[in-house]
Structure formats: structure tokens, C-alpha cells
Length: 435
Ligand SMILES: Cc1ncc(COP(=O)(O)O)c(C=O)c1O
Image (cartoon, rainbow, N blue to C red; front, side, top):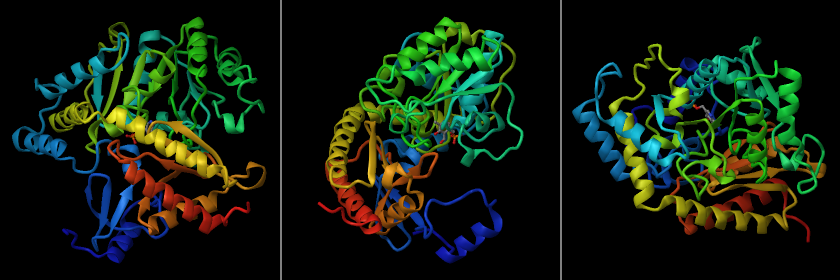
């Protein structure tokens, strides 16, 4: 396998030459040298079941032959011209995005990342509304630029002392730890109503836009109740506020029934932003909006690499594979199977405080008595799972959520391996529950 440095040398050079904030998930990280389907391989050939997909990105499996063939063919034909010149893949991708997104969303700007997509969406919302303030949700993650990091309401990801201006925050729909100390079913949707409170108390009454992830990914797979987004949208419409659905993690079929997460709530946003799974790991981002809003993008906009033929051809191949292999249906089928397995396990394992998500976007919150977040134990469980050959992610404001976001072509057999290894790993770190 083609690595010229050994694991220790790579580790040392990483410490020496890469900024310290680029952290690793594992205390004792494997050196991955190959990926195939739902598996990763280290330099000794050891196989790992990848249940995190490069942070929710390798949507159709590592090195999918059809996707790789499209990328390679494009690399060998035409790699770059910039958007100042006419090429086909960007236009075909923009057309395809207009076909798979709901409502009147039909004008795209292709970028290189989710951060850039969110930046552009906010800019466009401000330009088209001629308003400025932005509402974000607590615990959100929206990216790494100054603006996107300010939209990110999670101190773990906020480096700056001085935030970007004009951002206000509403409570998130975190039913397991309700910010209003209510219980689902009898809560009166206080979290959705908080959007109105924030508009009335923290803005001039005319904010430009609200941005939200349908399911907060980095925030710990926080999954709002069914009536949450319809109520939020009703409030936003009342105040003439636009809505961006950040589909960077929930996009391209991961939640099962729909191409995009927000459709699970039957809401049509004014913008969708996407990235990650759209090109299976080749850098890409995209914003899609309505023709009316897009009218505001009249000044010149260029993004040197955005819309490049390699990323766009790759994205088109990914979308084809999702359709041809019926991967949304598979995400729903295997996701439901995993969820049922976890709920079953939860009955006898009190450390599994909450199990939540949709399709193949699943979180397990690890807690002690009185729901105390067990962050160190969660890190040890995920580390133990890796030692047993299964890669899962970790997230949440308190660092105590195990994230299961695998490639969409996993099988129930893979799911059984996950469930078995998760169970024994929790037991080995937390202890076997007493019956
Ligand atoms: C919901 C969400 N939005 C935006 C981003 C930023 O995307 P990128 O890392 O491609 O800039 C991420 C990345 O994790 C994300 O999860």
C-alpha cells in the first residue's frame, strides 16, 4: 500500500507541521491507506467497518467504481477552466439539483465546501431582502469561516473573541434536554415559539433570514419533533424572514424518504445549502434558491474552483448511483433496523440516555445518573469500537453523543456488526447493566 512514511513518522510530522486545532478523533488513531465500499483499511491491511463515512461524506461508499470512473475520466479530459468559461458539468449539475429539490428552488451557485455555501446563502439573503440580521439555532454547526463560525452556536468550535455581527440565536429543539424543561407532547412547541421571541427581542423586527440544520449533526443528531419546522416557517413567513435549510449533513438522501432532510417536515425553504455527501468526498458545496431571490446576485460572483468539472461530474455520478442503487430506500431500511436495535439495547442499558435520528443519521447520547453527560466515557467507547474494527463519530455540545452516519449502501449484516460492537464496547467502558 502506497505510504512512504510509517505511522509514527506521520504522527510526528502532523504534530510538527499542522496547526494544533486540526484534531484527531482517536487517541490512538489508525493510519488509513485504503477505502472500499463500507470498509477502511490500515497500512497492515486490517479492515474497519466505516460507520462515520469521513464525517457523513462518503455517501455511496469508498471508491465507488462508477463514481471513481467519472472522476478519473474528467481528470483525464478537462480539469479546470473557472466559471468565467463555458463547460458542461456545472450546468448539468445545476439542472439536476433543480430537479431533486422541492418547490421553486432552481438557481444554483456551486462552491467548494459547506462553509462557502452557507456564506453565499447568507450574503444572497441579505442582498435580496435588503435586511441584515440572521437567526441561528443554539448548538448548530455551519462551518469554519468567521461568519459560519459565528452561526455555529457551540463554544467548542468558536475560536474568535469577536463574532461576526448581526447574528442572534434561538433555542434548539432538543427534546431530551428541553431548554424550557417541558416534555414532548405537552410542550406547546416552546422551542419553535422561541424564534418569535428572538425576532421580537433581539432584532429590529425585520431579520433577513434564519438558518437551521433539519437535524443538527455536529450538535449531536438533534432531531426536532414533526410539528417544529412547520411552526417555525409559519413564524418566519409572518415576519417576512427567509429560511435556509443547511442540508450539508442531511442532504442527498441520508435521512431515507427524501433527497433532503427538511422534506421530512414538509417544509419548502428559500435556500438549501449542501456539500459533504454530494460528491462522496471530492470537494464541493452548493446553494440553491428561487429565481426571484437569485435576482439579487447581479454583481460579479466568482469562485475559482467552485463549479469545477471534476467535482461536478463526480456529484452527477453520485446522484446517479443513489437513484440506480435505490440508496434512499436502503438508508431508510437499514437506518430503521439500526434504530430498532438501539432502542432494544437501550431497554437494558441506562447509559444509553437517548437514541434519535432519521434514516442513516443516528445519535446515541451516553449519560450517567440524572442525564449527566459522560463525555470521557463516550470517547472511550468510540475508541474501544475502533479497536474492535468499527468506526463511529462523536459529537454534541457536551461531547457525549455517538454518531452513526455510514455510507448509504451498508447492509443489515454491517448493521449487526455495529450493534454487537457498540453493545460490548459500552459494557466494557460503563459496565454491564444489572437486571
Ligand atoms: C451542517 C453543516 N453545515 C456546514 C458545514 C461546513 O461544511 P464544510 O466543512 O464543507 O465547510 C458542516 C461541516 O461539518 C456541517 O455539518
